[in-house]
Amino acid sequence: MGALSRKHFLDLEFAPKEDLQKIIDTAYTFKDVLDRPIKKVPSLTGKNVVNLFFENSTRTRMSFELAEKRLSSDVTNFSASSSSLSKGESLKDTIQNIHAMKMDAVVMRHPTPGSVYQLTKFVDAVVINAGDGTHEHPTQGMLDMISIHEKFNGLEGVKVGIIGDILHSRVALSNIFGLIKMGAEITLCGPPHLIPVNVEELGVNVTYDVDELIEWADVINVLRIQRERMGLGLIPSIREYRHHFGITNERLTNHKKEIVVMHPGPMNRGVEIDSNVADSEQAIILNQVLNGVAVRMSILYLLLSPGEEN
Ligand code: CP
Image 1 (cartoon, rainbow, N blue to C red):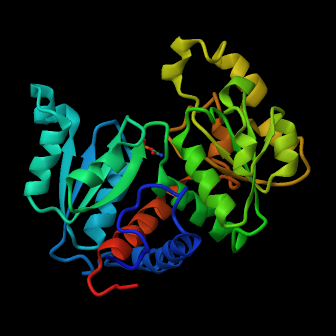
Image 2: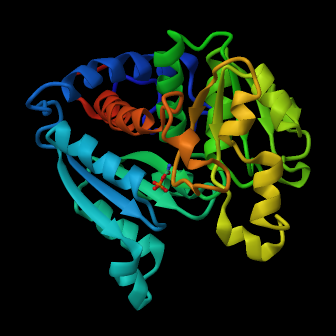
């Protein structure tokens, strides 16, 4: 058992607040490491980590690999498209083979919600959720939280707006669970049919008016409009979406206050966010990426570091 109260890192819904605070505090020390000329520490020397990606990823995959290497662990990468899964092998057999190779940690992204919980039944290793379908993306939630924490010197009482396709967003769900636990306030905004029914029961507010959201918020987290869903007719047109919900410079400057703008990536410039906003001083999007490496180092270290006991 590592220094967190749970063996695995699967969600923010059930993670204790103390664990989230410990991850944030430790991530700050790793941010200092990332500023050094030699950005590597020996903390996980001799540990084996495998990155199992059954879905595409740029940021999360690279960020985990970099975090693992910065901690000196041995890293194995697995992608579904180049594996024996494409020859008909079952997921269970693939995972049991990985188990037989005595991995210490498995980082998994998978399109099926809850798949990470199943994985814990087949392996002894620590399991870290790198995004399971529309369920959660807890390490993204943590990197978003530390980015807000850094900007506002804490999370208590910070007003966070989350805008976009909330219904299908694992990023939104992890943000909601994590930020509410840490004392932030949340308002969701998006087309009514892309906001889950009864979502207020999670302790959030809802508005369908983006200008109202901007007037209220200290920071907004702008979600990707998933173009692959356009075929399902969920959004009439990109132009209409941008008109009602797009974060444009004009819209932001109409309000007399400056708010912080975040985006988990990948961005659709000119759809949910305009380029001049994404590249502006008020956007902390690339800082989120840097914080992603530090927070993943923190999680791996706290779960795997020898001698760290409760
Ligand atoms: N934010 C995020 O999860 O990006 P990737 O899909 O590129 O990993």
